[in-house]
Length: 99
Image 1 (cartoon, rainbow, N blue to C red):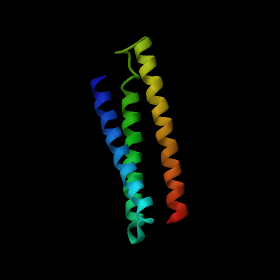
Image 2: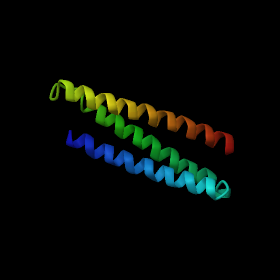
Image 3: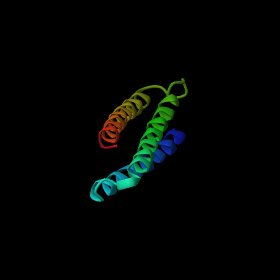
Image 4: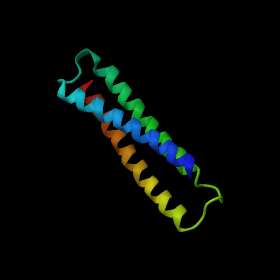
């Protein structure tokens, strides 16, 4: 469980960095000549966040933890991973449309 909390903390940090960069990109008029580099960073961070979430879920695959707690935590992680995956898809579409 401790490992899961650690990788989810990394995931949150990566998503925060992505949000800051997206806000600066939008407020700054599109990033100009840096657009592709900025979008690449954002895509990398969100993809890394998704990997972190998957890593956490893999930790619940074994029999070390069973019962209601395992089910509740895993259900929430799956939900967060779906939202992160959707965010990455939207970011990829934005990059393709504006790039």
